[in-house]
Figure 1 (spheres, rainbow, N blue to C red):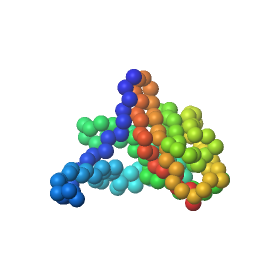
Figure 2 (figure 1 turned 90 degrees about the horizontal axis):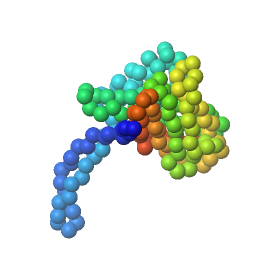
Figure 3 (figure 1 turned 120 degrees about the vertical axis):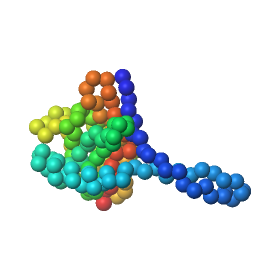
Figure 4 (figure 1 turned 45 degrees about the vertical axis):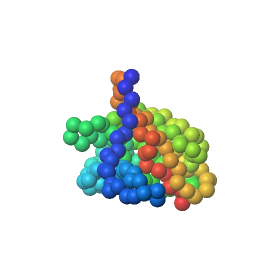
Length: 158
């Protein structure tokens, strides 16, 4: 079984002298490739035609050129309040959502079910302190491929 992890492009930065006079390398991870944000914005119109709502977090596979396939999402973060239901949807296959620490929802892990608009997870925000709640996603397209992303869009509870 192959497991694919998301790849983030790295851009070297200028070397700056450290306090002790030596130079050390610093890199900046780019989580969104140039132009990807515009592309994702355009996808929201297509997703609404497919029956996805504005309140859905849409999970899809993204490949630029012949590079590795990664998971991508729209929107890139999600704001919710207690009692609000968050919906994750995917046309690409079954997936699971797992909390990376405290969960804003009743459970720590959710597995998708098949609905008329694709695979989906619905979870209602419980009465938790305001803050950012982080989750990981694992998606299978069938066969032996699993795509894992340890940093899907955070749920920001207001």
